[in-house]
Image 1 (tube, rainbow, N blue to C red):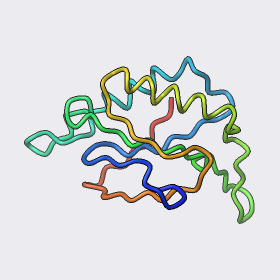
Image 2 (cartoon, one colour):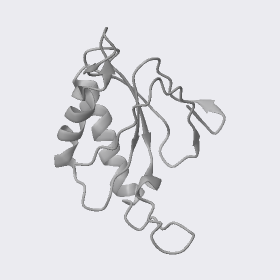
Image 3 (tube, one colour):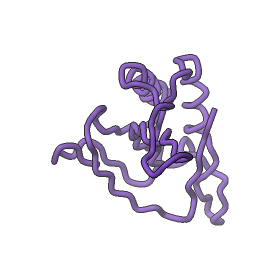
Image 4 (spheres, rainbow, N blue to C red):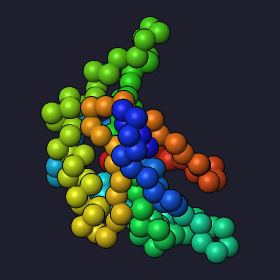
Length: 133
């Protein structure tokens, strides 16, 4: 992942997580979110079955702050991001999530908050899930 022409985060095998927050999210939900990402059984075992978590395998997560996940396209042709948390609310939550995962033993790479980033991804398998708490 690059930001403003500089590489700021890179993992090998692991999870790429696009993370968005809304107005009523708070720090109390961060441990639950970290637990879900850390223990979600989405990685293949030796038989090719999704039985392993990132905690069981590479322990690597690439977290990308992504307010546009809350884009509302129900009206018109231009999305609105009114449901996305303002940066001053979202950034401390994002930092708390990174810290919570690191405390569990994760290798966590991130981008830079409030910058445009280019994320390169090799999606190994058809697994893309949305997690809402």
